[in-house]
Image (cartoon, rainbow, N blue to C red; front, side, top):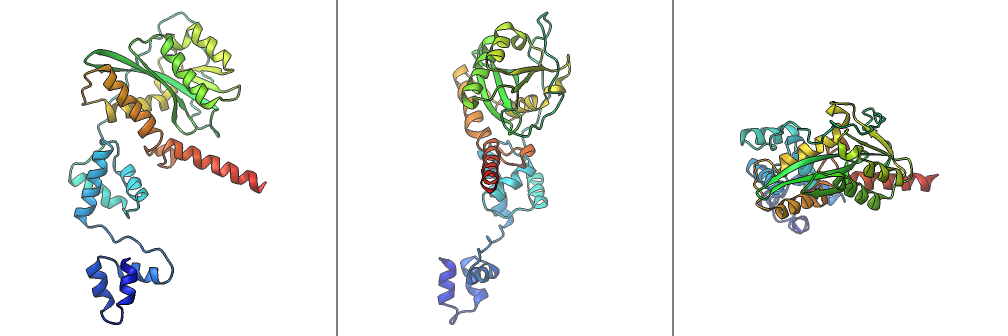
Amino acid sequence: MKYAWIDTQRTQYPLPAMCSVLEVSVSGYRAWTHGGTPHRTRLTEAQMLALIRAIHEELKGAYGSPRMVKELRGRGFPASKPRVERLMREHGIRARHKRRYKVTTDSTHHLPVAANRLNRNFTPSAPNQTWTSDITYLWTDEGWLYLAIVLDLFNREVVGWSLQPRMTADIVIDALTMAWFRRNPAVGLMHHSDRGSQYASQPFQDKLKAYGMEGSMSRKGNCWDNAPTESWFNSFKNERVHGLRYATRAEMTAASFKYIEVFYNRTRRHSTLDYKSPMQFLNDWRMAQHEEHLVA
């Protein structure tokens, strides 16, 4: 270890000279001698820029400067917000441009609709209290695919999803079924969606009833009533769809799986969750609940 070698040579060479040769800080060495943890040497402009570019490439342009700062710090590198913002601005490094959400479900039907019981309460106090759902469209050279997701509002995790070439009731039923098997929630969970015919259909309503869930639907023409789910689609399309070409449905399916199960749920930092990933946020909450139980 560099610090141990410096300690053995203190009587022969000046401390600043040895630290300079080994590219460590004097304060770091002194912290080590007192049993502390030495801080990393501050990255040079070139080192910081190279690291930002590497992360930007690795995450396919998903992060702007706020998430980039959190990512750098999470990887153990000291990073100030003004410095990261400046380097990204000066070198044209930015998150992929966001596009406006476009409604895809058909609400011009005569099926019964549920009241808006959610009423924009997007911050439940525990998991499996409120799930939201929606459908979006994805183009490939082989034709359209439709993606339905189920989002747990507590930690914004995609707990269920389905990708199919037709936008029928089966797609939302399959996504809900996946979510139910994964989480097995208690009776009384609120499920919120728009007024699309897939969600208003009798087969889907029968599934909600069988799972003991309470239905809720957005008001007519009001996309803000389901804002978190629509925001998720915006992020997904900005980071994995827009500007890219998918030759086959299989390619799109593979990309969707990787984004949801490997990147988004496990890794992507979410601003609503104090820049933690959905699974990290949930695990931290569970640990806190466990500790409170032990104290009680």
